[in-house]
Image (cartoon, rainbow, N blue to C red; front, top):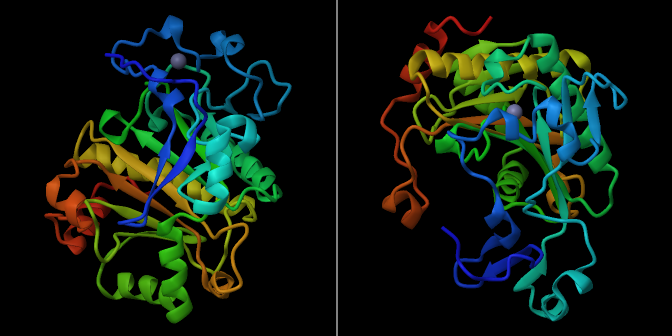
Length: 340
Ligand SMILES: [Zn+2]
């Protein structure tokens, strides 16, 4: 299905004044391939034999020069945000945005992380050492973005499966850096400013309420106090730390373990279930007010199964509805035996 509108327009960040909600408008993404089921391996741009179809990598494992690469990061062909001159990208709209803030050029960097040279669909098929390599190049890319004065905040996210928004079967995730702080992060900063011990309390409450799934060397995997879906899980740094890219090798290996343990446990409990995960780190650049939260921030990964779709009540109110008590979810996840 296609509709007639200008697909060449650069991305913009639009503002709804009534709800104070912002929406990225990215018309070029309408041309994305989305034939997840029928996409043929021979046409897959992420397979190593088709490397010439994609841009040169910005990061690659084990090295930028490697012909037989194990993983690589390339620019997204259908980005939500783009580097570019606002004046040339959206002309008069950008100019008016400077006064109304209603339509801003969506500045940023949007990459694809190709997690395997082979046409496989699950992170569980990736050997652990290669999976550590994936997180290592993500860390290197994040370090690059953190030095760009135009990038305010960045994340890595995974759409695992059709229900989670994946458009290509070949195993991959995405990395995005933007020039604003998302409402989810601002809200957490506000909470931390008023309750500096919040992360410590979240970890101790999880322990006291039997919601710990697994204790890693540097992190704890827990079911959060108010999970949005059954089996939602968070990986939280034990010590205060703002950023993933400043962590040592031991931490990267823990992240690699969790991001294979969680999908394995979910697959054990609900075969074929889709899931997302995303990284919540502190902004690279923040206001003096928000910066008061920096010393209390524990960066974390949130992993969310996509078992039931968002329905009218969730969309209309912002409240999620789940069916499984968090303590039960933690026990079932632990009992899969997938955490070592
Ligand atoms: Zn492929």
